[in-house]
Every structure is written in C-alpha cells, then in structure tokens.
Image: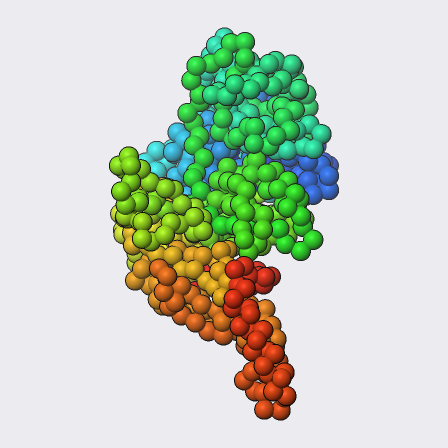
Length: 601
Ligand code: GDP
Ligand code: MG
C-alpha cells in the first residue's frame, strides 16, 4: 500500500465505554472478519485463546477500507491493552499510532480515564477524533456528553462530534470516513535506512521473540539481516507479517506499516520494547525517540514458593518482563529465602498484578518481600566526591556509621478525579507528604499534580486512592528528581538470628513507631515453635522493640511446676543454645510475615 493511504490509529476510552465493541464493528464493516466470526469479541477472545495454547496475540489488525472518495485505505487498528493506570501499556501503542478515536459513553459522559487517555494521546501528538458512543441506549444523554467533550479541548469546541452506536453499528461508517479524512498518513522515507519501532513483544516457545513493530523509515523484508540500534549482535528476520486478524506472513513491510517480526531470538532479554530495529547492511544512525519506558519506582524480592522451582520462576519472570516495559528484574540471593529475584515495579498495584499474572498465566507461586523505593546513598569521605550508591534493596543499605546522607526519588503524580472526591484526594496526598504543584478543573473532573516521595506512594496510596474515589480516579506518575531524606534501616532478628529479607528502610521520625508495630505484627505472623522466640527490631545497632512469639504449647520453662525439674532445665538449655547458634535463622517465613511488614499503618 502506498504510504499516503495508510492510517495507523488506536481507540482510547474509559473502561466499558465500548472500545472492544467498536473494534469489532470496524473489523466487520471493513470485511476483515465476517459477522459469524464475530460471535465473540475478537481482540478480547484472543487473550482467552492465549491461555489455551495460542501464544501470539494480535496487537494490531490490518483492515482495508474503501473510502467514499473512491480510494482504498489500509487501516491499522492498534490495540491499547491494559489499563491507563499503567500508562506505559497504553503509551507504547500510542507511540505506534498517528491518531486516536476518543470514545465516550453517552450514558456516563467523560470519566477520569477519558481524561488520562486523552492526556497521553496529546503527549504523543496524535490527531484525536472525539466520538460519542451508545446513542441507542435509553439512558444516553447525548447533549450533555457532547457539551462535556467540547469543553475538553479547544479544538473540540466547534468541530463535528460523531455520535454512534458501536453495538448496532449506527453511524460507524462516519467513523471510518473520519479516519482517512482526519488522521494523517504516516510520515517517513521509504528509500532511507530501515528504522522500525518495537512497540510490543511476545514470546513463543518455538519461534522465540515475536516483536510488534511499526516501520518508520525504509523497508523490512523476510530474511533480512537485522540489528538493534546501539547493539552489535545481529539476527535474521525469520518471517514478517500482519494480523488480519490471524497471523498472515507478508514478504515486505514498508514505511508506515505495522505488523509482526519473528526474530528467532530465544534470549528474552535480547530485545526490549521501545528499541529501534535497523539492517546490518545499511544501519540507520539515530534511534526513534518516540517511546521511553517508565522507570521502576519500587523494588521487591520475588522468591519461588511451594512447588515452584527457581528455574520455573526465572522462565516465567523473563517472559513476563518481555512485554511489560516497566517491570525489571535481576537475580538476588537472600540468606533467609535463598535464590530469587529483585524486581522493579511502577508501584504496589503493579506488583499485585504481576504476582497475579505469574500465578494465572505462568502457574508459578511466588513469595514477595515488602517493597521499597530507590535511594541514593552518599558515603562519608567518598572519593571521588559526588559519587553515590544506588540502593534498591534494603539489605545493601550501608552501615549508618559511614553514611553521609541519603536521597530518595520523588515523582510527579497526576491524579484525575471526579470533583466530589477532591477534598478527600487532597487530604490523602497531604497525609503522604505531597506538595501540590498544579490543579486543573475540567467541569466535573479535576486533575491534580502533586510532588510525592516514592516511598509514600509505594505502599497503600494507589489502593487508598481507588477506594476513596470508588475506583473513579486515575493515577499517572512521572519521575521527578532525587532529594535528601532522613532514612534509617530497621533490621529484624527472630530468635536472635537476623532475617535479611525483613530489612526495611523508613523515615527516621517514624522509625520507633514502625519498629514497635512491626514486632507486634510479626508476633502473630511468625510460625510458632514449642518454645517462645524473641522478635527484635534493631535500628543503628540498638534494639528498639521486642516481643516474644508465644510457644505452641505452654512453655515448660515458665509454667514448669507440674513438670520435672530436669525437663525444665532441658528446655532452658535448648533456649540458650538457640541464642548462641543463631547465626542464621532456620524459620520458614510464610507470605503473611511479609504482608505484615506491608501493612504497618
Ligand atoms: P471496553 O471496556 O471499552 O472494551 O467496552 P466494551 O466494548 O467491552 O463494552 C462494554 C459494554 O458496553 C458491553 O456490554 C457492550 O455490549 C456495551 N456496549 C458497547 N457499545 C455499546 C453501544 O453502542 N450501545 C449499547 N447499548 N451498549 C454498548
Ligand atoms: Mg474491552
């Protein structure tokens, strides 16, 4: 297809506003699929098939549309899976698009995710077509929805706003017409060196990494020798193709086109989303600047649990990391938990999702340690001056005696919430030491921008925000900077043995209080033994708090009256032996112990 007749676009919407239904109608009206095939929602059903052995999921679907202007167009509909709360998920699709259909449900009007998605689309310079959906619904308030939409952007004020029913198909042809009329054709140089953006990737056990790509310059051909910009290693394009909606091999993908590339690469770390592919014969000189994956904000340890082996966990984690650009991992060896991984996440909610995906998609069980933020630690007498240690694991936090000062990462948190919850959301941010940077009213919705320390949003912030606003608020975070903070490490000893996996970093002012809460929580979370076990929280070499985990049965040493003296002495002897041998704890820590550390407020 000639470049002028290609259109690459995404559909963005608040959840349930009809994105999948409209995608189905577009595929149906362009005869990409027949009505019969559409009995189940296609883009969604592919996700289901995935769990039944079909490993490759369509991220873009090529449709052909005969415009009323007599021309034929190639419409590449790029799926935006996931959730706008993980803006990376949406952003990587938008990075491959030139336009977006902004869909709003007429029964609900503009919602927080409508705004958050719109903000991303603007960030990626997309042409936006506002569309009102569900006009067939008796509860639709089309006029009110139109009014809201018009106020959202200056350019929406006087333009036509399409009103459709994705369900019945009413006026969907108007959307199809608007796509070629309004969304620009892809730019790029067909004769230049190849530049293709990897906007997503998947792993197939037989074919290796299969990348979703958009060609920005040049041509991509089967059997071409390729390399990633900035890397030396090369690989061969095993096959290339498109989804329509099934995988279909094609000999060439030209400038502006979207499709897949079977790389044959079996090392899942060999190719990252956001990278630029070029040819080894005529390499391009600059990468596509379009998409920068978000940095991990919080880190936690993931360790195999139950039947799961380290190898199984490793396989699962590496595949998962392939298409989740904000999830990072590296091996970690813990004294208490053995071999596992130190992993980076966007936040605690992201961690929960990853844990859930590992269980349901990869069938592995993991134990997660309490998450923490990233710290820069400056040491006393550091040579050369200005160098610091980057700490993502409390175990590696240096001894307090040699620390000069510590800086913590801060983020810009952009929260969109219905007006009703404004004061509750502001209160939440203030409780978490947020500093208000900006406030922007959009009728019934408000967008707040706060500066917040990562450690404050790493734990319950997201869940609190969601529950305060009944799920209506959205949160997007961007890294801001590092600033000095006063942080100390709390170390925990169980039965006199240090348990490295329980190390946590906390603000000094709250350290005592947290230490006391911690031991109280652990008292009930640690599996009991026949004898009482002391749990101690230690800060800067001082025991700050201590409790005893009660024994399974009554302790002979305490309630020994009815027992023989020798029994009592035997127990006492064993307890003191414990104390001396306690170099390493032999207690198997269940998840509840780490959850106890998480829920300290
Ligand atoms: P998504 O979350 O944005 O992908 O939303 P879906 O496409 O899954 O739609 C959510 C619900 O709205 C489904 O039950 C659809 O059948 C329904 N729906 C979507 N479009 C329309 C429409 O135009 N009219 C009506 N009445 N319902 C619709
Ligand atoms: Mg959907």
